[in-house]
Amino acid sequence: MSIDHKDTSSRSSRRTLIKAGVAISAVGGLGVLAELAKVPVEMAGSPLNLPSDKANTLTWQNWSGIQRCQPMAINSPPNESAVAELFKQRAGSIRCVGAGHSFVPLVPTDGTIVSLDKMSGIIDHQDHLVRFLAGTRLSQLARELDGIGLAMHNQPDIDAQSFAGAISTATHGTGKELPALHAKVQSLRLVTPSGEILTCDDKSNTDLLQAARVSLGSLGVITEATLEAVPAYRLQRKVWLKPVEEMLSMVYQLANQHRHFEFYYLPFTGYAAAITHDIAPDDKIFRPESGDEAMLHDLRQLRDWMGRFPDLRRWVAKKMIDPQQIESAQDKSWRLLSTSRPTKFNETECHVPQEHGVDCVREVIQKLEQRHDVFFPLEFRFVKADEAWLSPFYQRESCSIAVHAAAGEAYEYLVQDIAPIFRKYQGRPHWGKLHAHQATDFAILYPRWKDFLALREHCDPQGRMLNPHLRQVFGVKA
Image (cartoon, rainbow, N blue to C red; front, side, top):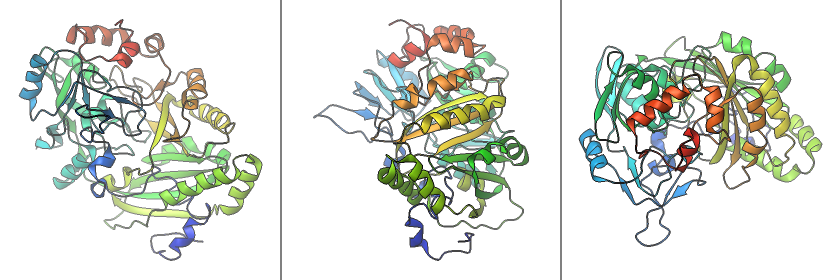
Protein backbone atom coordinates (compact mmCIF):
# COMPACT_ATOMS: atom_id res chain seq x y z
CA MET A 1 0.00 0.00 0.00
CA SER A 2 1.45 3.36 -1.00
CA ILE A 3 1.17 6.14 1.56
CA ASP A 4 1.46 9.81 0.73
CA HIS A 5 -0.35 13.01 1.56
CA LYS A 6 -3.06 12.29 -1.03
CA ASP A 7 -3.90 8.88 0.39
CA THR A 8 -6.89 9.16 2.72
CA SER A 9 -8.53 5.83 1.94
CA SER A 10 -8.64 2.62 3.96
CA ARG A 11 -7.90 4.34 7.27
CA SER A 12 -9.58 1.58 9.21
CA SER A 13 -7.21 -0.98 7.70
CA ARG A 14 -4.34 0.68 9.58
CA ARG A 15 -5.63 -0.87 12.75
CA THR A 16 -4.81 -4.29 11.27
CA LEU A 17 -1.90 -5.62 13.27
CA ILE A 18 1.17 -3.49 12.39
CA LYS A 19 0.60 -3.80 8.64
CA ALA A 20 0.25 -0.09 8.02
CA GLY A 21 0.40 1.58 11.38
CA VAL A 22 3.96 0.62 12.13
CA ALA A 23 5.49 2.79 9.46
CA ILE A 24 3.26 5.77 9.65
CA SER A 25 5.43 8.31 11.44
CA ALA A 26 6.48 5.37 13.63
CA VAL A 27 7.19 7.25 15.43
CA GLY A 28 7.11 10.93 14.95
CA GLY A 29 7.67 11.17 18.59
CA LEU A 30 5.47 8.17 19.43
CA GLY A 31 2.46 10.38 19.91
CA VAL A 32 -0.21 11.61 17.53
CA LEU A 33 0.97 14.52 15.42
CA ALA A 34 -1.48 16.96 16.93
CA GLU A 35 -0.85 20.50 17.98
CA LEU A 36 -0.61 20.88 21.73
CA ALA A 37 -3.24 23.58 21.56
CA LYS A 38 -5.77 20.82 20.95
CA VAL A 39 -4.69 18.97 24.12
CA PRO A 40 -6.11 20.01 27.51
CA VAL A 41 -3.57 21.51 29.89
CA GLU A 42 -4.19 18.65 32.29
CA MET A 43 -2.65 16.22 29.75
CA ALA A 44 0.47 18.34 29.68
CA GLY A 45 1.04 17.55 33.35
CA SER A 46 0.07 20.89 34.84
CA PRO A 47 1.30 20.99 38.45
CA LEU A 48 -1.92 22.68 39.48
CA ASN A 49 -4.09 19.70 38.56
CA LEU A 50 -3.40 17.92 41.78
CA PRO A 51 -5.21 14.83 43.08
CA SER A 52 -5.94 14.79 46.78
CA ASP A 53 -5.39 11.75 48.96
CA LYS A 54 -7.52 13.19 51.73
CA ALA A 55 -9.25 16.43 52.62
CA ASN A 56 -7.01 19.50 52.74
CA THR A 57 -3.93 17.54 51.67
CA LEU A 58 -2.22 18.55 48.44
CA THR A 59 -0.63 15.80 46.41
CA TRP A 60 1.59 16.55 43.43
CA GLN A 61 2.55 13.87 40.91
CA ASN A 62 4.54 13.85 37.72
CA TRP A 63 3.17 13.16 34.23
CA SER A 64 3.70 9.40 34.32
CA GLY A 65 2.58 9.05 37.94
CA ILE A 66 5.74 7.46 39.40
CA GLN A 67 6.85 10.55 41.37
CA ARG A 68 4.62 12.20 43.93
CA CYS A 69 4.75 14.23 47.11
CA GLN A 70 2.62 16.11 49.59
CA PRO A 71 4.04 19.63 49.77
CA MET A 72 3.27 22.10 52.50
CA ALA A 73 2.06 24.55 49.87
CA ILE A 74 1.88 25.25 46.17
CA ASN A 75 2.49 28.82 45.10
CA SER A 76 2.00 30.39 41.67
CA PRO A 77 3.59 33.87 41.85
CA PRO A 78 2.42 36.38 39.23
CA ASN A 79 5.75 38.16 38.76
CA GLU A 80 9.44 38.25 39.65
CA SER A 81 8.94 40.44 42.72
CA ALA A 82 6.48 37.90 44.10
CA VAL A 83 9.06 35.14 43.61
CA ALA A 84 11.63 37.15 45.57
CA GLU A 85 9.09 37.83 48.31
CA LEU A 86 8.18 34.15 48.46
CA PHE A 87 11.78 33.27 49.36
CA LYS A 88 11.69 35.80 52.18
CA GLN A 89 8.33 34.67 53.56
CA ARG A 90 8.60 30.90 53.20
CA ALA A 91 10.87 28.73 55.27
CA GLY A 92 12.24 25.36 54.24
CA SER A 93 12.72 23.72 50.87
CA ILE A 94 11.43 25.31 47.66
CA ARG A 95 11.23 23.44 44.38
CA CYS A 96 10.11 24.88 41.06
CA VAL A 97 7.89 22.83 38.72
CA GLY A 98 7.03 23.06 35.05
CA ALA A 99 4.95 20.42 33.29
CA GLY A 100 6.08 17.52 35.47
CA HIS A 101 7.64 15.67 32.53
CA SER A 102 10.73 14.55 34.45
CA PHE A 103 10.78 10.92 35.53
CA VAL A 104 13.33 11.35 38.31
CA PRO A 105 12.22 13.05 41.57
CA LEU A 106 13.43 16.57 40.77
CA VAL A 107 10.29 18.18 42.19
CA PRO A 108 9.13 16.21 45.26
CA THR A 109 9.44 18.16 48.50
CA ASP A 110 7.61 18.51 51.79
CA GLY A 111 8.21 22.24 51.54
CA THR A 112 6.86 24.61 48.88
CA ILE A 113 6.35 23.92 45.18
CA VAL A 114 6.51 26.97 42.94
CA SER A 115 4.76 27.00 39.57
CA LEU A 116 5.56 29.70 37.03
CA ASP A 117 2.38 29.15 35.02
CA LYS A 118 1.29 32.76 35.67
CA MET A 119 4.62 34.05 34.36
CA SER A 120 4.23 33.36 30.68
CA GLY A 121 4.59 35.06 27.31
CA ILE A 122 6.99 37.16 25.24
CA ILE A 123 7.99 40.49 26.79
CA ASP A 124 9.82 42.07 23.86
CA HIS A 125 12.24 41.34 21.06
CA GLN A 126 15.00 43.07 19.16
CA ASP A 127 15.95 41.52 15.85
CA HIS A 128 16.40 37.80 16.65
CA LEU A 129 16.80 38.23 20.41
CA VAL A 130 13.53 37.48 22.20
CA ARG A 131 12.93 38.13 25.91
CA PHE A 132 10.13 36.21 27.59
CA LEU A 133 8.94 34.93 30.96
CA ALA A 134 10.46 31.62 31.96
CA GLY A 135 7.17 29.88 32.72
CA THR A 136 6.20 30.02 29.05
CA ARG A 137 5.41 26.56 27.71
CA LEU A 138 7.38 25.57 24.63
CA SER A 139 4.15 25.16 22.67
CA GLN A 140 3.10 28.73 23.49
CA LEU A 141 6.57 30.12 22.81
CA ALA A 142 6.62 28.47 19.37
CA ARG A 143 3.29 30.04 18.45
CA GLU A 144 4.17 33.49 19.77
CA LEU A 145 7.50 33.40 17.94
CA ASP A 146 5.70 32.40 14.76
CA GLY A 147 3.46 35.42 15.20
CA ILE A 148 6.48 37.73 14.90
CA GLY A 149 8.11 35.77 12.09
CA LEU A 150 10.59 33.83 14.24
CA ALA A 151 11.15 30.29 15.51
CA MET A 152 13.33 28.29 17.86
CA HIS A 153 16.39 26.84 16.10
CA ASN A 154 15.20 23.38 17.11
CA GLN A 155 12.59 21.77 19.34
CA PRO A 156 12.28 18.62 21.44
CA ASP A 157 9.70 16.02 20.48
CA ILE A 158 7.41 17.13 23.33
CA ASP A 159 6.52 20.81 23.73
CA ALA A 160 4.44 20.69 26.92
CA GLN A 161 7.34 21.76 29.15
CA SER A 162 7.90 25.21 30.57
CA PHE A 163 10.98 26.86 29.07
CA ALA A 164 12.71 27.08 32.45
CA GLY A 165 12.06 23.40 33.12
CA ALA A 166 13.20 22.40 29.65
CA ILE A 167 16.57 24.13 29.79
CA SER A 168 17.17 23.17 33.42
CA THR A 169 17.21 19.51 32.40
CA ALA A 170 19.02 20.05 29.05
CA THR A 171 16.00 19.20 26.91
CA HIS A 172 16.97 18.76 23.26
CA GLY A 173 15.80 17.80 19.80
CA THR A 174 17.83 16.12 17.08
CA GLY A 175 20.30 17.42 14.50
CA LYS A 176 24.03 16.85 14.16
CA GLU A 177 24.66 20.60 13.85
CA LEU A 178 21.90 21.68 16.23
CA PRO A 179 22.56 22.12 19.97
CA ALA A 180 20.02 21.77 22.77
CA LEU A 181 17.67 24.62 23.70
CA HIS A 182 19.81 26.03 26.50
CA ALA A 183 22.74 26.69 24.13
CA LYS A 184 20.79 29.53 22.48
CA VAL A 185 19.97 31.27 25.76
CA GLN A 186 21.81 34.62 25.74
CA SER A 187 20.76 35.85 29.18
CA LEU A 188 18.71 34.86 32.21
CA ARG A 189 17.21 36.53 35.25
CA LEU A 190 17.54 34.45 38.40
CA VAL A 191 16.02 34.90 41.85
CA THR A 192 18.35 33.33 44.40
CA PRO A 193 17.16 31.80 47.70
CA SER A 194 18.16 35.01 49.50
CA GLY A 195 15.64 36.92 47.39
CA GLU A 196 18.35 38.62 45.31
CA ILE A 197 17.52 39.16 41.64
CA LEU A 198 20.47 38.63 39.30
CA THR A 199 20.95 39.22 35.59
CA CYS A 200 23.23 36.65 33.97
CA ASP A 201 24.66 37.42 30.54
CA ASP A 202 27.97 37.86 28.70
CA LYS A 203 28.74 41.05 30.67
CA SER A 204 27.69 40.20 34.21
CA ASN A 205 27.58 36.92 36.13
CA THR A 206 28.98 35.11 33.10
CA ASP A 207 29.93 31.98 35.05
CA LEU A 208 26.50 31.93 36.60
CA LEU A 209 24.95 32.02 33.12
CA GLN A 210 26.89 28.91 32.07
CA ALA A 211 25.85 27.20 35.29
CA ALA A 212 22.20 28.33 35.22
CA ARG A 213 21.61 27.27 31.62
CA VAL A 214 21.39 23.70 32.96
CA SER A 215 21.00 23.73 36.73
CA LEU A 216 18.25 21.25 37.74
CA GLY A 217 16.57 24.19 39.47
CA SER A 218 19.28 24.17 42.15
CA LEU A 219 20.50 27.77 41.95
CA GLY A 220 17.22 29.61 42.39
CA VAL A 221 14.17 30.38 40.25
CA ILE A 222 14.68 31.46 36.64
CA THR A 223 12.11 34.18 35.89
CA GLU A 224 13.13 35.45 32.45
CA ALA A 225 15.18 34.28 29.49
CA THR A 226 16.48 35.91 26.34
CA LEU A 227 16.74 33.47 23.45
CA GLU A 228 18.49 33.76 20.12
CA ALA A 229 15.76 32.86 17.65
CA VAL A 230 15.90 32.32 13.89
CA PRO A 231 13.62 33.41 11.05
CA ALA A 232 10.49 31.24 10.88
CA TYR A 233 10.98 28.24 8.61
CA ARG A 234 9.07 25.34 7.12
CA LEU A 235 10.25 21.75 7.13
CA GLN A 236 9.71 18.79 4.87
CA ARG A 237 9.55 15.43 6.62
CA LYS A 238 10.19 11.93 5.31
CA VAL A 239 9.63 8.68 7.22
CA TRP A 240 10.66 5.29 5.91
CA LEU A 241 11.62 1.79 7.11
CA LYS A 242 14.90 -0.09 6.94
CA PRO A 243 16.13 -3.34 8.53
CA VAL A 244 17.83 -2.23 11.71
CA GLU A 245 21.36 -3.32 10.78
CA GLU A 246 21.07 -1.50 7.47
CA MET A 247 19.86 1.58 9.36
CA LEU A 248 22.78 1.41 11.76
CA SER A 249 25.21 1.33 8.86
CA MET A 250 23.70 4.58 7.53
CA VAL A 251 23.16 6.75 10.61
CA TYR A 252 26.26 8.94 10.33
CA GLN A 253 25.70 9.46 6.62
CA LEU A 254 22.05 10.40 7.19
CA ALA A 255 22.95 12.72 10.07
CA ASN A 256 25.39 14.54 7.79
CA GLN A 257 22.92 14.78 4.92
CA HIS A 258 19.88 16.13 6.77
CA ARG A 259 19.12 19.05 9.06
CA HIS A 260 17.36 16.67 11.42
CA PHE A 261 17.75 12.91 11.52
CA GLU A 262 16.62 10.30 14.04
CA PHE A 263 15.38 6.75 14.02
CA TYR A 264 13.07 4.59 16.10
CA TYR A 265 13.74 0.91 16.53
CA LEU A 266 10.54 -1.16 16.65
CA PRO A 267 11.24 -4.02 19.10
CA PHE A 268 10.93 -7.60 17.88
CA THR A 269 10.32 -6.52 14.28
CA GLY A 270 13.88 -6.20 12.97
CA TYR A 271 12.99 -2.79 11.51
CA ALA A 272 13.80 0.81 12.33
CA ALA A 273 11.92 3.89 11.11
CA ALA A 274 14.08 6.76 9.88
CA ILE A 275 12.77 10.31 10.22
CA THR A 276 14.38 13.27 8.46
CA HIS A 277 13.43 16.94 8.39
CA ASP A 278 14.92 19.43 5.95
CA ILE A 279 14.11 22.99 4.97
CA ALA A 280 11.04 22.89 2.72
CA PRO A 281 11.44 24.01 -0.89
CA ASP A 282 8.15 25.96 -0.92
CA ASP A 283 5.26 27.13 1.28
CA LYS A 284 2.96 24.16 0.73
CA ILE A 285 1.44 22.51 3.78
CA PHE A 286 0.39 18.87 3.79
CA ARG A 287 0.21 16.40 6.66
CA PRO A 288 -1.38 12.94 6.48
CA GLU A 289 -3.62 11.70 9.23
CA SER A 290 -1.45 10.23 11.94
CA GLY A 291 -1.48 6.51 12.71
CA ASP A 292 0.93 6.72 15.65
CA GLU A 293 -1.43 5.64 18.40
CA ALA A 294 -2.76 2.79 16.26
CA MET A 295 0.82 1.71 15.61
CA LEU A 296 1.63 1.70 19.30
CA HIS A 297 -1.55 -0.24 20.02
CA ASP A 298 -0.60 -2.82 17.41
CA LEU A 299 2.92 -3.24 18.80
CA ARG A 300 1.47 -3.75 22.26
CA GLN A 301 -1.09 -6.23 20.93
CA LEU A 302 1.59 -8.21 19.14
CA ARG A 303 3.52 -8.34 22.42
CA ASP A 304 0.43 -9.43 24.34
CA TRP A 305 -0.40 -12.19 21.85
CA MET A 306 3.06 -13.54 21.16
CA GLY A 307 5.33 -12.26 23.91
CA ARG A 308 6.13 -15.80 25.01
CA PHE A 309 7.17 -16.76 21.48
CA PRO A 310 9.73 -14.13 20.37
CA ASP A 311 10.75 -15.92 17.16
CA LEU A 312 7.14 -16.20 16.07
CA ARG A 313 6.57 -12.59 17.06
CA ARG A 314 9.43 -11.46 14.80
CA TRP A 315 8.22 -13.66 11.95
CA VAL A 316 4.68 -12.27 12.12
CA ALA A 317 5.93 -8.68 12.35
CA LYS A 318 8.12 -9.05 9.28
CA LYS A 319 5.25 -10.59 7.34
CA MET A 320 2.92 -7.76 8.26
CA ILE A 321 5.32 -4.85 7.69
CA ASP A 322 5.52 -3.29 4.25
CA PRO A 323 9.07 -1.85 4.04
CA GLN A 324 8.11 0.15 0.94
CA GLN A 325 5.87 2.50 2.91
CA ILE A 326 6.93 6.14 2.99
CA GLU A 327 5.32 9.10 4.69
CA SER A 328 5.85 12.68 3.63
CA ALA A 329 4.70 15.87 5.33
CA GLN A 330 5.44 19.58 5.11
CA ASP A 331 4.52 22.35 7.54
CA LYS A 332 5.87 25.03 9.85
CA SER A 333 8.82 23.80 11.89
CA TRP A 334 7.04 23.83 15.24
CA ARG A 335 4.15 21.79 13.92
CA LEU A 336 6.39 18.94 12.78
CA LEU A 337 9.20 18.83 15.34
CA SER A 338 7.03 18.50 18.46
CA THR A 339 4.11 16.20 19.15
CA SER A 340 1.73 15.31 21.96
CA ARG A 341 1.85 11.88 23.60
CA PRO A 342 -1.50 10.57 24.83
CA THR A 343 0.05 7.22 25.80
CA LYS A 344 2.05 7.79 28.96
CA PHE A 345 5.36 6.08 29.64
CA ASN A 346 8.50 6.09 31.77
CA GLU A 347 11.88 6.64 30.20
CA THR A 348 15.63 6.47 30.53
CA GLU A 349 17.93 8.38 28.19
CA CYS A 350 21.67 8.73 27.97
CA HIS A 351 24.00 10.76 25.76
CA VAL A 352 27.14 8.99 24.58
CA PRO A 353 30.08 10.29 22.53
CA GLN A 354 28.98 10.40 18.91
CA GLU A 355 31.61 7.93 17.79
CA HIS A 356 30.19 5.31 20.20
CA GLY A 357 26.53 5.84 19.29
CA VAL A 358 26.02 2.84 17.02
CA ASP A 359 27.93 0.38 19.20
CA CYS A 360 26.00 1.51 22.25
CA VAL A 361 22.54 1.37 20.70
CA ARG A 362 23.25 -2.05 19.20
CA GLU A 363 23.98 -3.39 22.69
CA VAL A 364 20.91 -1.69 24.12
CA ILE A 365 18.70 -3.31 21.49
CA GLN A 366 20.18 -6.73 22.22
CA LYS A 367 19.60 -6.28 25.94
CA LEU A 368 16.06 -5.00 25.47
CA GLU A 369 15.03 -7.98 23.40
CA GLN A 370 16.02 -10.32 26.18
CA ARG A 371 12.81 -9.08 27.80
CA HIS A 372 9.75 -10.34 26.00
CA ASP A 373 7.47 -7.70 27.54
CA VAL A 374 9.14 -4.84 25.63
CA PHE A 375 7.15 -3.18 22.84
CA PHE A 376 7.77 0.58 23.04
CA PRO A 377 10.06 1.92 20.26
CA LEU A 378 13.60 3.03 21.11
CA GLU A 379 14.71 6.52 20.01
CA PHE A 380 18.13 7.49 18.62
CA ARG A 381 19.14 11.15 18.00
CA PHE A 382 22.12 13.44 17.41
CA VAL A 383 22.95 16.60 19.42
CA LYS A 384 25.70 19.19 18.89
CA ALA A 385 28.15 20.10 21.67
CA ASP A 386 27.78 23.25 23.81
CA GLU A 387 29.46 25.00 26.76
CA ALA A 388 26.93 24.88 29.63
CA TRP A 389 28.69 23.36 32.65
CA LEU A 390 26.11 20.64 33.39
CA SER A 391 25.02 20.09 29.82
CA PRO A 392 25.26 16.39 28.91
CA PHE A 393 26.65 17.73 25.63
CA TYR A 394 29.36 19.83 27.28
CA GLN A 395 32.19 19.98 24.72
CA ARG A 396 31.06 16.64 23.30
CA GLU A 397 29.23 15.79 20.07
CA SER A 398 26.68 13.24 21.18
CA CYS A 399 24.20 10.55 20.26
CA SER A 400 21.16 10.24 22.50
CA ILE A 401 19.52 6.89 23.14
CA ALA A 402 16.10 6.82 24.83
CA VAL A 403 14.30 3.69 26.03
CA HIS A 404 10.65 3.72 27.11
CA ALA A 405 8.26 1.53 29.08
CA ALA A 406 4.50 2.03 29.13
CA ALA A 407 3.12 3.67 32.27
CA GLY A 408 1.64 1.07 34.58
CA GLU A 409 4.09 -1.62 33.45
CA ALA A 410 7.47 -2.67 34.84
CA TYR A 411 10.09 0.01 34.30
CA GLU A 412 12.88 -0.77 36.78
CA TYR A 413 14.78 -2.61 34.06
CA LEU A 414 15.29 0.71 32.28
CA VAL A 415 17.93 1.39 34.89
CA GLN A 416 18.93 -2.07 36.05
CA ASP A 417 19.52 -3.53 32.58
CA ILE A 418 20.32 -0.51 30.43
CA ALA A 419 22.39 1.70 32.77
CA PRO A 420 25.45 -0.61 32.73
CA ILE A 421 25.59 -0.32 28.94
CA PHE A 422 25.37 3.46 29.10
CA ARG A 423 28.16 3.50 31.68
CA LYS A 424 30.34 1.35 29.44
CA TYR A 425 30.21 4.04 26.75
CA GLN A 426 30.73 7.03 29.10
CA GLY A 427 27.10 8.04 28.80
CA ARG A 428 25.86 11.17 30.53
CA PRO A 429 22.23 10.63 31.59
CA HIS A 430 19.45 13.03 30.73
CA TRP A 431 18.84 15.00 33.94
CA GLY A 432 15.09 14.42 33.79
CA LYS A 433 15.13 10.72 32.88
CA LEU A 434 15.59 7.63 35.03
CA HIS A 435 19.22 6.83 35.83
CA ALA A 436 21.45 5.28 38.51
CA HIS A 437 24.35 7.74 38.43
CA GLN A 438 25.71 9.24 41.66
CA ALA A 439 27.75 12.32 42.53
CA THR A 440 31.00 10.36 42.13
CA ASP A 441 29.99 9.44 38.57
CA PHE A 442 29.17 13.02 37.66
CA ALA A 443 32.47 14.27 39.05
CA ILE A 444 34.19 12.11 36.42
CA LEU A 445 31.81 12.84 33.55
CA TYR A 446 31.65 16.64 33.93
CA PRO A 447 34.89 18.69 33.75
CA ARG A 448 33.21 21.69 35.46
CA TRP A 449 31.47 19.64 38.15
CA LYS A 450 33.44 21.10 41.09
CA ASP A 451 32.96 24.61 39.72
CA PHE A 452 29.21 24.07 39.60
CA LEU A 453 29.11 22.69 43.15
CA ALA A 454 31.01 25.71 44.44
CA LEU A 455 28.66 28.13 42.67
CA ARG A 456 25.61 26.26 43.92
CA GLU A 457 26.93 26.47 47.48
CA HIS A 458 27.48 30.21 47.02
CA CYS A 459 23.95 30.81 45.69
CA ASP A 460 22.20 28.52 48.16
CA PRO A 461 24.37 27.92 51.25
CA GLN A 462 21.39 26.64 53.24
CA GLY A 463 20.37 24.15 50.56
CA ARG A 464 16.84 25.50 50.22
CA MET A 465 16.63 24.53 46.54
CA LEU A 466 17.57 20.92 47.28
CA ASN A 467 15.45 17.85 47.88
CA PRO A 468 16.55 14.26 48.64
CA HIS A 469 17.21 13.49 44.98
CA LEU A 470 19.37 16.57 44.41
CA ARG A 471 21.28 15.99 47.63
CA GLN A 472 22.19 12.59 46.23
CA VAL A 473 23.08 14.00 42.81
CA PHE A 474 25.34 16.69 44.26
CA GLY A 475 26.68 14.60 47.15
CA VAL A 476 25.29 16.96 49.80
CA LYS A 477 24.66 15.43 53.21
CA ALA A 478 21.29 16.06 54.81
